[in-house]
Amino acid sequence: MSEKMKQFEFKEGEWVVTGWAEGQMETEREDDRGNKVTVMQPYYQLFVLSPCSSFKSENYGASGLKAEKRRCASNAVWKDLHPMDVVNLYFDEKKRVVMAVSAGRSVQLDEVSF
Image (cartoon, rainbow, N blue to C red; front, side, top):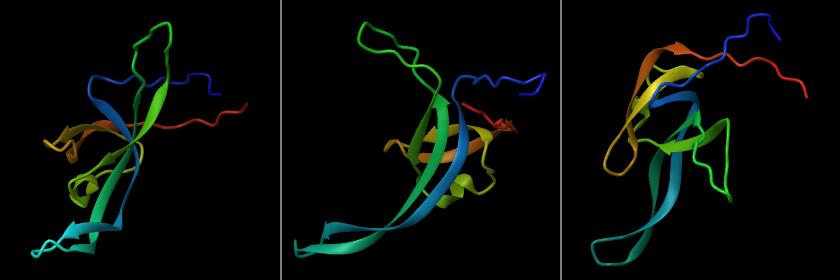
């Protein structure tokens, strides 16, 4: 490890972007006549890290970071992002990410040995 290792601290509402994905998936829908049809639907996903909840009880406790997959409204969300950017995320009423705004900094992962 380096002599002066910086420790990253999250500010309220911050996430670290680790990557993204987009593609097409099959889904069933009803057509105009009420018949079920299979259609291809686009999907957009953003992969992020965020702090675990600080909630503790006699049956639960967590610490560290959690990896999450967040649905996005479109691939425009990650247009200007790079992996390991620190961002603020904004959501629509369906809890999809509609905008990710860079906090102007990024995170570097150091090698860990066990």
